[in-house]
Picture 1 (cartoon, helix red, strand yellow):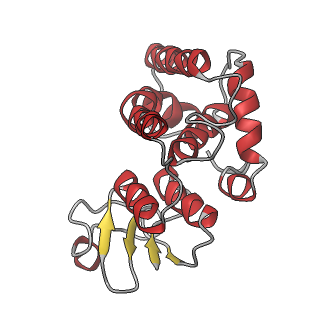
Picture 2: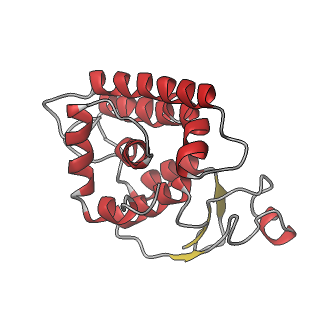
Length: 205
């Protein structure tokens, strides 16, 4: 399998972490700014959105959109999603929530504080972004179970991979952090896994 995307991308790391958990071999190629512009005909022929990641299977099958790739891997490799219907629903719930609810609030704060992106310097907007992000983390703290190791039971699922990467971004962004004991314990468990440690290093936000 080929994986096209720079490892600094959180969406690329979702896929790489899943592949490592599956012990699947792959070749990764750097795509995505500032390394390699994906808005070129060669890449747009694979993904018309010009975004990473993209995977190319051994038989030439091509797929884009990180969560679609994750669900495809879980289905074709018969792993990383629970077989119990209720647990499967919970894992899918958190997988979707991470993308639609947890991720959007961090945009301004991340660009201002971690990436130092020009134009992201409005203190009010930074504060609002942090406040909204914190509220979502509060929700996760309340929902995490103290009796199970992972969000959908006792086994790692795709939901844990995407949540782990978002939590990693929370802790690595230089800003005030409210104490979340359950999230901290959960994050520690995920980083104790070899693939979790590899794709949530201190140097990557």
